[in-house]
Image (tube, rainbow, N blue to C red; front, side):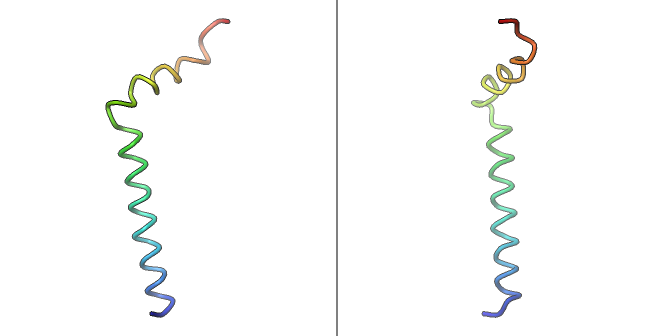
Length: 45
């Protein structure tokens, strides 16, 4: 294995990690929590 194989593997791992984060952020079961968190700056104490 040379350095280019390692770079290719890291690129694939990074892409999969990014896609996993995107899927988590757009999942329906997290929507309510994210909507609530988005309104926090506008709430009065």
